[in-house]
Every structure is written in structure tokens, then in C-alpha cells.
Length: 89
Image 1 (tube, rainbow, N blue to C red):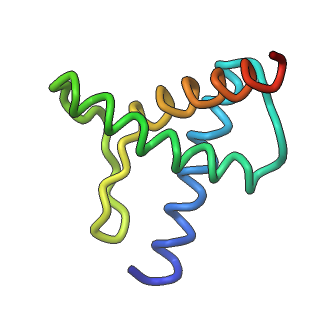
Image 2 (image 1 turned 90 degrees about the horizontal axis):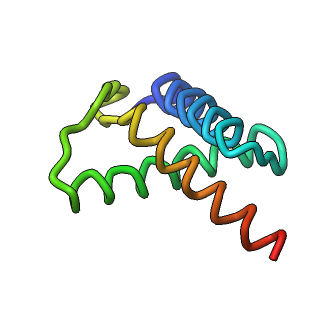
């Protein structure tokens, strides 16, 4: 994976993380936090999809890596909801 492909992967993760934060109506941090939330959301979403035997929806291929957009947004939303619940409680 080259630098440009890695940069594209970071941008996609940031967008998915920010969408997840917007759906949860809880934002913390800036774009770096959105990137982290996007990657954690991707892992969480893939885990949920595999456990429930659901198909990968809207997966983008970047540098030989598959990044599932829909599952990343769902995972990022769930992760952000848990974070907001922990910080408020």
C-alpha cells in the first residue's frame, strides 16, 4: 500500500467516523478522532456482520484492502453511542 492509497483510506475512515458521530449526535475531538472512530467502527461493523452472517455492503477497495462503508458507519455509530453513554454516566 502506497502513501496515496493510505491517505485515501484515512480520508474514507474519517468520513465514516464523522457520519457515525453525527448519527449518534455526539462529537468529541477533531478529524484525528473521526479517523480513529472510523477504523474502530469498521472493525466493530465487520465483527457484527460476520457474527450475524450478513453480507458486506458497499465495500471500497483501496490499495488491496477492503473497507466496508456501511458497516463502518454502523460500527462507528454504535461505538460513539457507547462512548457518549460512558462519558455522561
